[in-house]
Length: 300
Length: 253
Image (cartoon, rainbow over all chains, first blue to last red; front, side, top):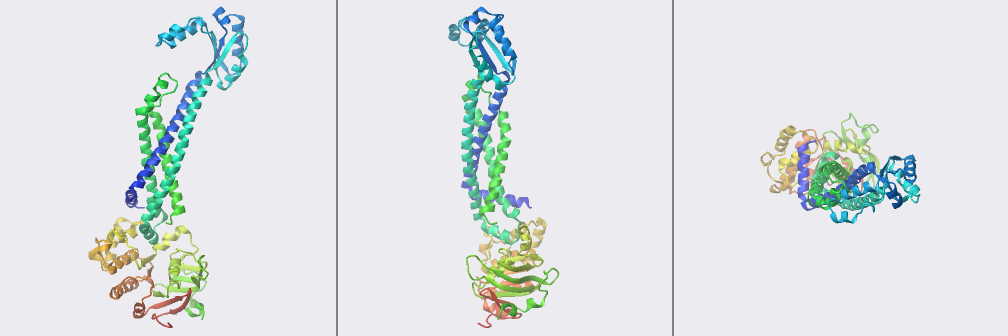
């Protein structure tokens, strides 16, 4: 196989129908960009789960009565609840937070907002038992068992909020994947069409190649490589696009969420981890489409 | 008169054994080809043997099966019945991946030259070697040799459109011959040429035949067939109606 020959054939082919090549590259790039975006969301969700699940808590808020009369959780009601919680399977640790401690934490949380601090009064916040879970999936059981017990005002499962957030992100991921798939379909059709046109414009060469006994590889490889080269260029464009999107608007758009630690920031390393998959996908799909097209529509 | 009775050459040789070490280069055994779209077979139970180094004219009116004959040799098609051998290739039965090997041992020339318009004369000839993976140094050595053989050594860097029809056909012959095929198939090579130029092309084909290459030429040109006095196989409605060792075009017409 003479590499220079194949290479020059590929370049001629790509140059000969520039408009279609450009269309093919752009469609591929957009499709892969969306796929990459979806993959970034997947990674973000994964990171969030890693971060939150380890410190995910269920807080059992005590009634105002218990809260104000039992600042050290020494009374029968509070201590009893604590013991029951500790004995529940899946629970790792139970910490008592008194009304005073809750107020201190409240002040810290809203240190930047004096009007919120003015609103809060030491007696308004309940004392609570913070339950740290070994097995986050069992947090629902605690909510069920402890809601309505004597001395319990409310049971808050922080996982519910997290779950809502993850659901939103899952929705975003699914939407990007759906659009990516539709775009990918368009890209497939364009690749297939470009190869057919390419093979048609070079039917004389191909006819002679067949006649003088060139092997299938020799006749088909230029067309196949044409598709693959376009795929690679598309993938590179999509990766650059992802980096540009991160730097120009994603960072600033997500800033409120990332700075408060709700969503982990998308790092360039994340784009770096996603990129090889985009390249592999591009190469695989373009090569496969090319091969199938040549088999089905082009007699070589 | 049946085709089997007429074509005597095939009866004499080894009729059932594949021509491995025999001097046979082409052998068709009771070949029938039926196209789906046609009721009449394009070839109807024909048997033809061609020895190494022969020069054979394949004649007959349009639709007599000449093109089908040539397509079967190149494995562009497979026969409906019968067997086809070229050299030691069992053409109809061989695996698809071996087809390139078969075609590398057959050179082809056509009425319409089929040159690549954007390549020079030398590049056109070199193309045939490049695409079968011949090394660069071989190509550099062989291409000028074959251009000299066909009488175009001064025109290696011309473009096809700068050449006359006869010269273009010489380029096509050079391309068909450059890989030293066993068989050269010429499908009406003089169809687009004036009589004088045609004579030149025939001289060239004869010269190639003298190097030991078997030449199989389909033609409608009476005067050429008559002047050459070579073997003539005549097809009509898919049957071999004549196989003369030193024939002329017009007998029985």
